[in-house]
Length: 124
Picture 1 (cartoon, helix red, strand yellow):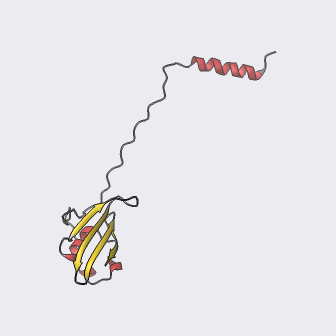
Picture 2 (cartoon, one colour):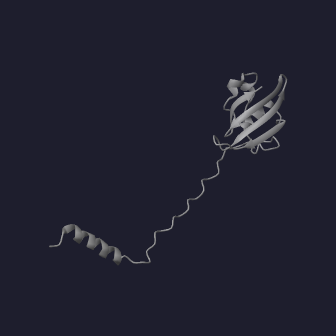
Picture 3 (cartoon, helix red, strand yellow):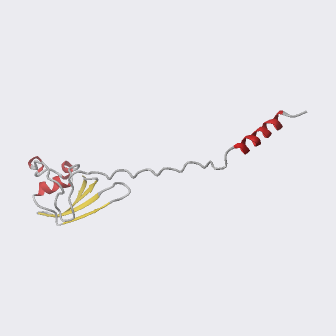
């Protein structure tokens, strides 16, 4: 008497032997790289904006630092009316673009810290 499990095992062996030997798993198609982020007009290493912007700095003159948070790099340059003394740009795990701009202001040095083209804080 043939046991049902033996029949199933035998059928599995027969079917696996019938599979063509030239079948290979499909090669994975490499995913295309994500598009480069676009941050709009940003400040280059010379302190110049990469694009022209429209910005009225008058409402921000004399405002506390907290009121400036969120402004772009080029908006801060327009607010000062001149390029920063120095610009450093890089990347980190938290953002794709981090920029530090140094200005000499009447009360001393001010370091503007940006993340992805938005002002995060000012260190005086």
